[in-house]
Image (cartoon, rainbow, N blue to C red; front, side):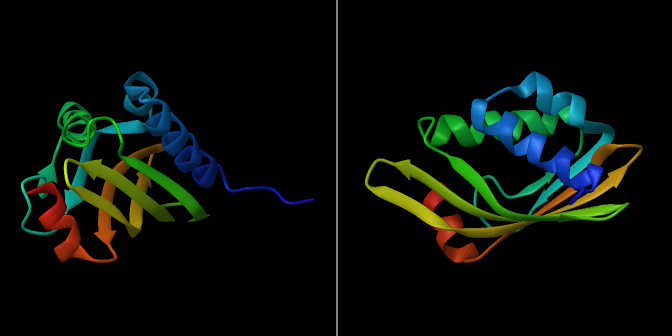
Length: 131
């Protein structure tokens, strides 16, 4: 019988909540010292350093995409301190479509997400889409 690592389940729960726009559940998954690092040169790139900033970033992504942004994991791997999710992403803006893949790398402490790094397959396309 296969038993999924608890941190893989934690990450899957986060994506499920994100897909539903349930920021209350996401907040419970984030460590109080969370940092979400988004590389690149677009307007959404940077470091978000508190649960409120991270949630604000997610709300902004939904706003800019008219609610069309989706990130769906097709593989999640986890150990005691880290997890990785391979995801398909999709979003639409007037005259633009973003469709690609990314890797989300998580560091987990005390059963909650303390660090997230998002690495887009095509950072230039992501930067252009959000600009």
